[in-house]
Length: 339
Image 1 (tube, rainbow, N blue to C red):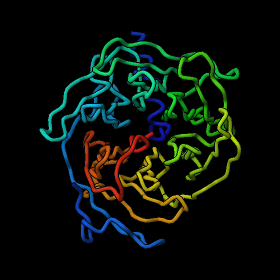
Image 2 (image 1 turned 180 degrees about the horizontal axis):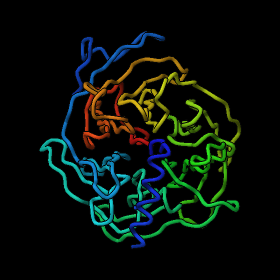
Image 3 (image 1 turned 180 degrees about the vertical axis):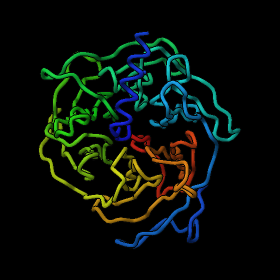
């Protein structure tokens, strides 16, 4: 989730109250997907379709959490959808059609991921500090995790799964106060144990494993930086350091995805664009949404087609919630579903 500015936080609060009464075109040869280290090129995304309009009840729409199911259909969440409106949307990108997969009277869902353990769809409910799961085709909603972790309730934003199906959650706690209380929380695949892996973070947002599952890339919204947590192989963290400082100007670091070459796709909140870095922190490309100066405020997340290079970007603002597409620099893998 995108780094919810104060206005968006107010919207989430409103949602909670309501429940009580929450192939791209490049400027170079499209076949040239490589870039020399340090050489930043611009890739212009192309509109696929509009999925949502601004909701009267919440005053905005915010698409997030794009992820592919086993049948190749794309799912996205609408963070600020009110009760009764589609909160998880299933999209046929070829036919350019969409349908509601899930709605309820409470959740404010900021990300979606399929578990490699049980195949269910897991959603982070930012407003209520919960993780909810659905059957792969929708329905059978279950609360997977709720309650405090080390004495504090989470504001779960994005999530990633390891190969065994354990969850790694970016907890954006402290965002509304502007304090560095953000955390990375590990929840075992049965939901019985939650452990804080890192704390003192500045509004933790995006989270994704690297290609080899050796560590986690995490973005910190209010510091515009990407940090790297090297894991110890036993459920803990071996080391942590600032890996990339993002020059975002008025924009802030949102969700992160990783492709088969290990490149990082850093989404931006406050600008409808995405920056691509390699694992050494070298800036390779900028994904731009045409006309983003009017009607769009963010490009929150991306999913790259498994085994292919077609990428789908969630873009939102006063003009509505849209899907845009571009050619990624490498093929999609599990980590390419934006976390």
